[in-house]
Image (cartoon, rainbow, N blue to C red; front, side, top):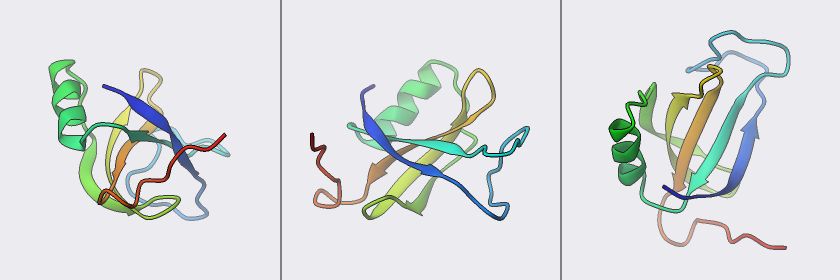
Length: 95
C-alpha cells in the first residue's frame, strides 16, 4: 500500500457521520490520498484484519470528488483513506 500525501483535515462545526469515538475539542479525521485504487487498499486492510468502519462513500476532497473509506487507528482516531475520482481530478504535489 502506498499513500501519496495528506489531502485535507476535516474540522466540523456540527456532528457528521461517522464521528470520533471519543470526541475532544479540535478532533477531526485525517484524510490520506492513496496512490493505488481503493479496492486494493481495502483488500490489503482486510488481509491485515483492519475493519472498515464505513465506505466506500463519495465525498468532496480539497480539489474535487473523492471516494473514501473510514477506519480507526490503534488509538481509535478516525482515518479516511481516499482516491480522487477520475484520472484528471487528482492534484499533483508541488514543492
